[in-house]
Length: 221
Image 1: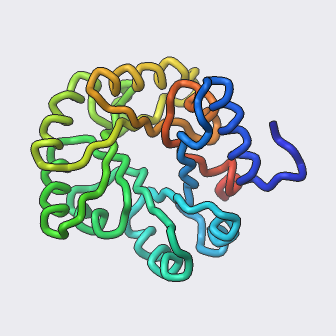
Image 2: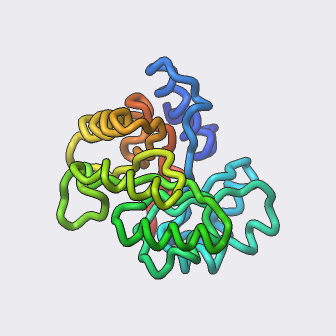
């Protein structure tokens, strides 16, 4: 699919569209989140000027340092938090981000619920699932998803879907399929899954949001 006359953004969008078409889905049903973590504003601006409007950051403090000025300059930019969120940063996250992809534990449900109530701002959230049952990774255990969803809904947090990061070095498709199954069982239709190495597979298995960094920005130094 790569064509030398296309920009990285055009190439990624074309690959998403191709994968969606194969899966009999509309390309517009997939939101591309450009993962701008660790990249300075001067690397981000060209993508904004090319038309990309949805970006993802891993850390609240890094986002606070670079995005307010960019959002003043460019209209319509949406910011998604895709990294782990500490409960003591919940209020800052609710204030800054348009979507949070890493709701994964009861203490964070409590912190986000209080922050949203205090600020009067309902921020859509994805529950992050530890789909590979890896000890070193964040995410809610698969068996605990229904209980976490129930507590989030009780706290009036708008949960829109599930998110996962499959284990490295293993075929991602079974993990994406499992996430889709868990989401369907719990009445959720949005799936945040797929990164630079596997987003086409994710799209074919139902991803509604793909989180792409290096394919857009190049490898981080």
